[in-house]
Length: 428
Ligand SMILES: Cc1cc2nc3c(=O)[nH]c(=O)nc-3n(C[C@H](O)[C@H](O)[C@H](O)COP(=O)(O)OP(=O)(O)OC[C@H]3O[C@@H](n4cnc5c(N)ncnc54)[C@H](O)[C@@H]3O)c2cc1C
Image 1 (cartoon, rainbow, N blue to C red):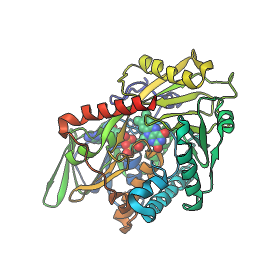
Image 2 (cartoon, helix red, strand yellow; image 1 turned 45 degrees about the vertical axis):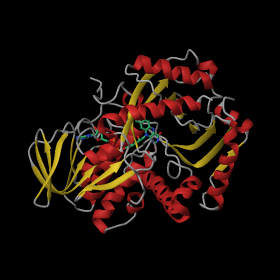
Image 3 (tube, helix red, strand yellow; image 1 turned 180 degrees about the vertical axis):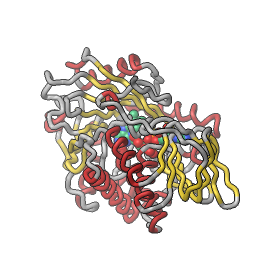
Image 4 (cartoon, rainbow, N blue to C red; image 1 turned 180 degrees about the horizontal axis):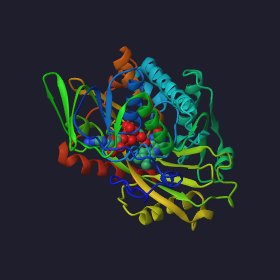
């Protein structure tokens, strides 16, 4: 039977495009380990893999199935750098730190590609990304960012696209200009999750599905994680629950909030060869980003998030098809085969949240829609920090990510209001 994640609506095309997915057992009794990890997405699984490979005893528990959070259901786009353009980030943290963060993201990109190659994970990588401008007034800023990336950040794979080139590469004249990035690409994220879980277990990590953590407490220098099938006693803990922290740990919950994002998949578009003929990933300049790409079998995967709450795949399809038709009017009646949603973990500054929240307990998440490569790499950097006292993760920990205002009860409504306002602003 097709698995339906209890924490997100709809069955993804990713899941349906695969043969039966291997299941992992739930934890069966208490354990004592060096490192315990809560959350089986990219962050947690990469940390488990790298720690186990270095001989550290590690147990990872996932509340449902690996990839059920954002990692197995996302848009699959790598991007380049951090979520903000490097010259914008520079205004906040200065050139040196912005450059260091840019370089880390480049390492992240190469790390994920090398990891997949080494472990023979065929994750359907397709090269290229187009960042397209929905407002002509953004032209000057984007030109400046492209120039800064090549002249000051040493990244020469980006070029500014005039209106004609943008229209040709998209197969639509909906956008004004664009930026073409040939140094990045997009993947089938669930294939990466599955390969990663297999690699982590083969390296010696004890990894369990269907084992939610119920509480985290500390006593005698140890951290105890209570689950329904036993207690994990650990010297160190990684909280890698991202948007799904709930009430498990309050500091993370105050800094990482869930917002919904929805994706729809069309039937294969063989009859529409002019739509993204180069098969690059596309992301637009709206605050409520629209992101889309073609799969190897020519479907359009189209994602957008809105202030609406749609829970049934039929409602999601309706909204997504409307957005598709604004860009590709010829697809206004296109059949949607899949529609699903997920929770993106965001922070107030849209920078990752990396913090020691209790002695020996690190929380990592909140990549704000930019975690396909960064979550994988942050998981690895967490392991490096433990294995060899590597300091790269400190670049993220040093970022000033404040908590969301409003306290436990007001945070979600305030965020909803803010997002609604930005969604409205995108339209004018
Ligand atoms: C629809 C959508 C589209 C996106 N598109 C892109 C994109 O194109 N490019 C990009 O870079 N990023 C994108 N993202 C973001 C990206 O997917 C995430 O940043 C990344 O996957 C985060 O990985 P993670 O391991 O930190 O968290 P997750 O993958 O969310 O994993 C957290 C896990 O923790 C588990 N968990 C939670 N609480 C408990 C508990 N108490 N006990 C045990 N387990 C628990 C959850 O079940 C979940 O599996 C998108 C996200 C979504 C939802």
